[in-house]
Amino acid sequence: RWARGLALVTALAIAGLPLSGGALAKAAVKPLLGPGLLPLLFTLSAVTATLLMLHVVRQIAAAAPAAKPAPLLPFVALAVAALAATPAIAVATGPGPGLLAPDTLVDAGWPVAAGALLALAAARAGWAWPRPVPEGDIVVLYEAVGRRLTGLVGAVTAAAGRLKGPTRERASPGAD
Image (tube, rainbow, N blue to C red):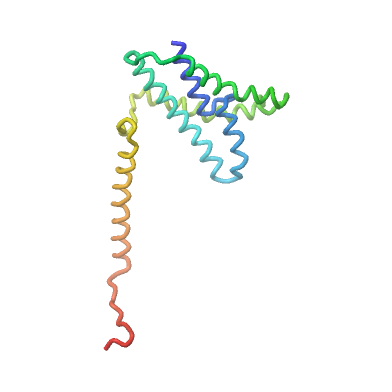
């Protein structure tokens, strides 16, 4: 049970849980995005990352009874690293209100909370991922997207041709 809790906290740290390495990485990158749409998309990606990481935790929990126990030390070491980055940097750089400021905690926390609430609502409603992709085979997804894009390009080309109307052949100079 504690391993599931550790997996959950690690997943949320990767998604950007406040005072974690994920939150620190996002805080370092966000000012570089400038004003406009990019910061919003970046924040929404944290919501998506939370959904994805919680889905992974659910899949691991579902497979846990049938799974062979894995070596514990590497897992614990990675979990500690994911959670210890921000406090370690805070100690190294000295005291300051930045990491613990309420606006910093809210800015890092709301996308994770929103993603967690969406994941919980989806789980309670019995929603599943749209279509399962065979394990390790993202190519299947790319092929499906490619087929749809090919059909879309064909439809747009046909519509553009209809809008242009019939074209007349131009006589080349000097041809009689």
